[in-house]
Image 1 (tube, rainbow, N blue to C red):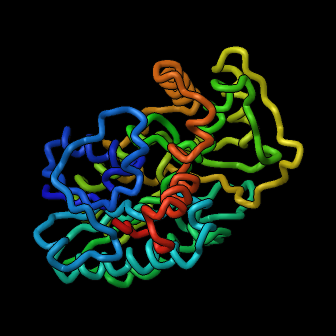
Image 2: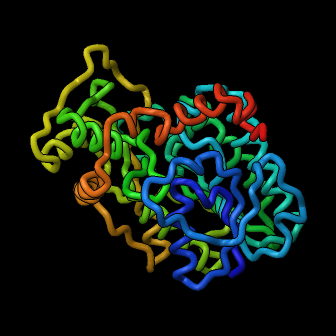
Image 3: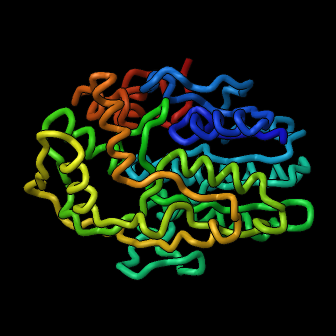
Length: 341
């Protein structure tokens, strides 16, 4: 298929783009490339792409594709909280407009990067795709709003699918350190402390970035009637853990490390456990390959290989919010997160 991937230079996008190429798809990208200086390992896939903000997409930009996989947006809660109006402009308005343009251009498939953050504060009950939304951050609210806006667009000519990813982890060319497994493993490797900034009690579903990419490819290649206007949780039901459980696994995997709680670490209201069986039942060729424990070992080995230092993952190079603030204070980005030069 001729596929447009928005956000193809991001944490998930780099891994997904490479996998789409390996599956024989003709891949084009669209990305403003804000994180061009955040490359962790130098294997960012090279495909034709538009260097463009998702807010500025035109009809011509999306014409001629068999499918659009829409990843682009502000990717986490700290960025969403930084300036909620930006999250609304980029994640909600930008995504809805992109979908409307795709429909107008005759693009039959539109796969949206939604999130299990939609469930928000949900307690300990396992949630399937029919569970009520209860987002507690601007990021989660934006994902819910897009799903609700896109569903009425579905018809015989336009087929949206919503992939609600669990919390991601694992090595990518554009690695993120604001993700719990990546972050705790980095703390353990660089300081010997598996440093928890909360009380460790909340539940999270976890999924490796490569398994997220596999879910997109499986959805793209599935018969349209199987995924039309449907939402799927992405991950494995067995891979739901308390944050404290993750910390203990890191302690076990990283030599000479020990769990440590921040003195002012309080509870995190984001707490949810997710049933991820529907996607595997629907798409029989899709099966996640990774476990959190194996992912921690992969991260640790990569940190050893590159000689990761604390100032890398806690500073402006790899932390998304710190990097954006640095670009703004340096007059490289303006307050609306657009390039000045």
